[in-house]
Length: 284
Image (cartoon, rainbow, N blue to C red; front, top):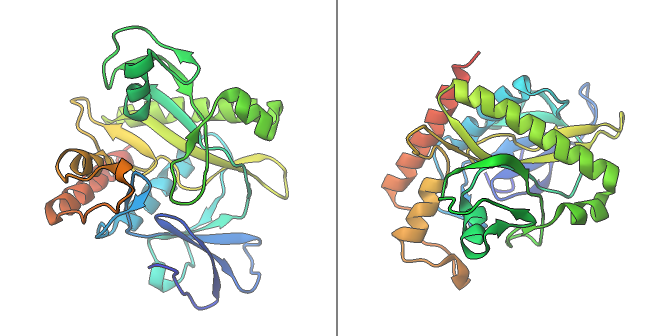
């Protein structure tokens, strides 16, 4: 699936887990991109091997579901008419002028936020209550943006004031508001499916025709979000992260390539992704 070649399309770019193509000739859909979700999986900004069977199809189904549920314009157009080679794992989407900010909403304290809190008692500019444990619910949902760095390197956490400097105060405030509204809406829907939405990342762009802010990229997938059940079982790629950190002997800070994921980890990860899809899609 790397550098995917599709008749009638030009390959535009590759992400860690997605391929972006554009039609060679303009069609009835207008200025669009074809977003293809591969079966690749990444962790700690490395692309891992092997792939997770049908992961791209699962993520496409989940994104399609959420685009239909969320109260904000988004870039999704259709899954109809995509090339047969990528059927089920590709979407036609409106081409946006992407805003260079990763919009992260955190409802619970975990991951890098908990690690920083354990060292300093706060996360970014937010002072937090004492004695919080890993996985605890936060007193309020936090907007903790990041910006993209060079490919293959960690995204950089930044303050809200930094976002304001990058995109202006009006757009920064809109991104913050939209991120929190979408997270709260999604958290309620996930809860009705018996799932806790711990945190998530959104990306937005400007529609070149309407100039409105539009939700883009993938949305609320187990790749871009942390999900868990009420007992704390993760329904996302934390299972892969845990293997790499606790069992593989590999150190993400070593600068070396991660080891291959064992077959049992590959299988379990696929099962977890399928589980969260099935639970969500059962919520009408």
